[in-house]
Length: 304
Image (cartoon, rainbow, N blue to C red; front, side, top):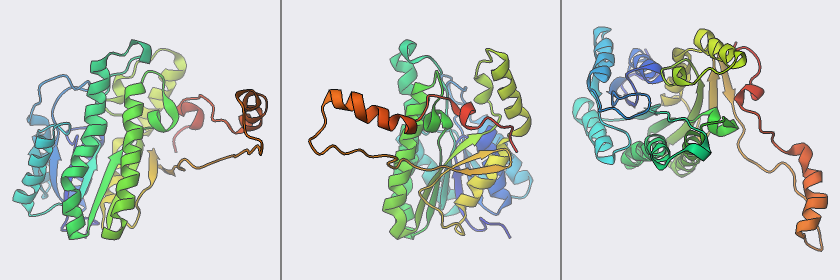
């Protein structure tokens, strides 16, 4: 018996990395899987290839599971609708969407062009919207459904050179939160995961100094995609009541993130002026300001 027995799961980006591990594990846990992957490059600029998604589907079938492949793009609503139709036609339903599909086009913001911005937003944020909007009514009608979207510490904490990626991933956080709130009465759940794992996307990050080389080595050796898949599949299970949360997976560590809430408030009965804010409000609040450190400053220790 698996935690997804009898369920149908759509996994985007399922040809490699986290997506592939999620698809393989979902199948081992009893799900029938639609494996989606455009088959393009990390930058998303190549013409899609149906082969990579089919290879994952074949691997599932060879192990005794049930899977079909799809090579549409999550950034195209018509393509996403075809994914859903394929799930219905092949397996008669759909119960969870695991959505790690993504691309990277890293560049310092002052050098970023519109194409780099639009492409990343289209896959990550528009893609999350597409797979959610195309399935939400079905999930609500059957009063059962789970979304597992993927965010990033690049958005939650920050990372230089990834303004497009960070903006998209924080947008996914907002989308997931509202879907969870609106879906609570219909047993529609939505959560997000910020993964730490060595994948094809992470391998594109330039190594510029010894410190970054050490961080990359830690990710390559101790933070694997299959570890992330364990949480994603647990969240996809109908046995999970969890919704509206932000998680990270870092090696064998599962992290629950807080969500933005007030940390300090100052009132001035006569009202504020720009000068009084400069003189009094900012100095009083400054001990509680969030620093500009990247994720390595928040997670400075080796993965467990």
